[in-house]
Length: 119
Picture 1 (cartoon, helix red, strand yellow):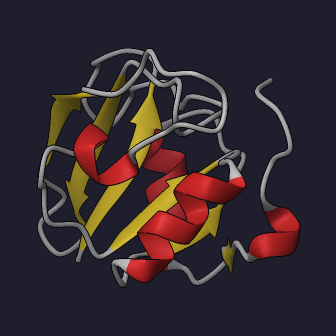
Picture 2 (cartoon, rainbow, N blue to C red):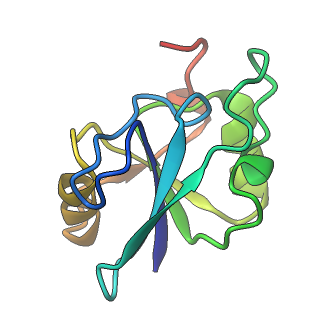
C-alpha cells in the first residue's frame, strides 16, 4: 500500500509528523510493502481556512490511505470522495506511525473526527 503522512521535515522514516494535513510543508509517501519512502511538497500548503484542495496538494500522487493528526471537514470529504481512506494517529515520527498502521492500531477518521479549525 502507498500511505501518505503529512510531515514537517524530510528525514525519511525519521521525519517528524505534522499535526495537520493541510498546513504540512510536505507529505511522506511510504510503500508499506517495501518500506521505501519519498517526500513530495505540499503544493496547496498556503490556502484560506476551509479551502484545502487535498488532491491538488498531492499533485496526483496515487495513495491508498492518508494518516493524519488532524484534518478539516472539507479535505476529509474530498479525500473520501476520491476513495482514499483517512486514518488518525498521533505518533511523533513516520516510522512509529507506519508501525501503528501495519499493526492495525489506527482508526479511520469520520466526519465527527474532523477539525473545526487549524491548530
